[in-house]
Amino acid sequence: MITQLPISIVRGGTSKGIFIEDRYLPEDQKERDAIILRIFGSPDVRQIDGLGGADILTSKLAIIGKPSIKGVDVDYTFGQVSVIDPVVDYKGNCGNISSGVAVYAIEKGYVKVELSTTLQEVKIHMVNTGRILIATVPVRQGKLVREGDYQIAGVSGSHAKIDMNWADCGGETTGKLLPTSHARDLVICNDRDYEVSIIDAGNVTIFINAEQLGLSGIESPSEIQEKEGLMDKIEEIRGRVAETLGLISNYKNSIKESPYTPFFSIVSKVNKYITISGKEIQSEEIDVVSRLIFMQGIHKAHPVTGTVAFGAASTIQGTVVNDLLSGEFTDDNSVNIGHPSGIINITSETITQDNELKLIKSKIGRTARIILDGIVYI
Image 1: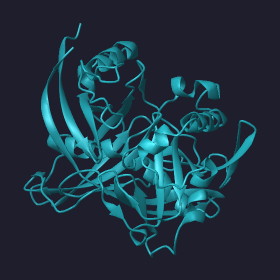
Image 2 (image 1 turned 120 degrees about the horizontal axis):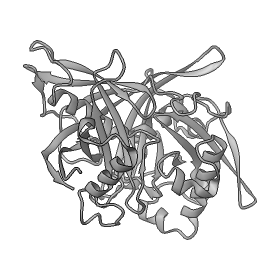
Image 3 (image 1 turned 180 degrees about the vertical axis):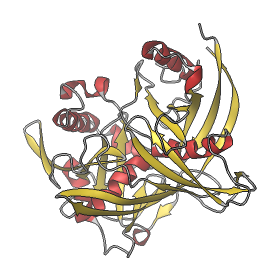
Image 4 (image 1 turned 90 degrees about the horizontal axis):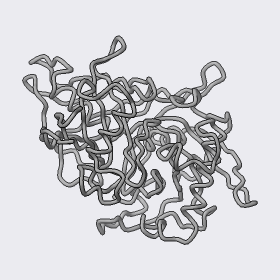
């Protein structure tokens, strides 16, 4: 019986996770999940007897291993550890944690860095979906560069910039960038039609105009969470889409069977608003506003994988996102998305190939660092 094992705590983007080497965990999935839940202190909303942090943005797991396919540097399996239920959800990916994987892979020797190299590519095999993510990490004299002037909303200070290329991640869950082949779909909920766009890139994400939910779109996470009946309505819409896509057997079981994915993005036109830290975001700084729901809560920033889907949606005519964009695209199809902590930028491009939409560019900047290496007692 395992009584202790080595771990790392890593911040990746605006998330923080526990990194565990695959070789230290049992092969049996039930035994493995039981150990993981014990490490995190779940289920418990405070996670007081574990390392989870009592927040959906810190209750994240990365299982790291040697590459199981050719042409990559490292295997990465993501798990979202529920705070409420004894569940580890492996259905999706976390883009923020992925940036931490790039740093971890270099630091732990999965990637050999030449002394003359200044930018090191790390090819990450995302085991959950079978896709490959390419991260470009600053290095110097064979080691990570930790200092830098790149800032991301939701993280204090500045750090070295990590460029993330998600071009291989279109249609990773359903096989199609537009899972239903439509830019918009109708979802019936309580005898009312809701118009949504469904995009499969990074993670399957549902987009809806804030007005359809009786919102302005610039509400704070707590204002959305506390609006009577709203989160239940969102969960039903999310569940019905998940059932339609074959991710779950019945929409009523969405929280139990697939709490993590699909994501749900509430989108609105540009408007100035105050971030959760008290900073005012001006209309001219952004192209569109998003409030994103996952794990039955409002993300305090904006998840990278949801941003990948957002960027793809922005390039597709007729989607909820594309119709709400405030102005013309720049030459590189760059979009600034306003979220509760500030602004996130994504550069995307899609093309039609063999009568199917393909994602050929999806670039986003992140920062990451290893916070702790240590031993956890089970």
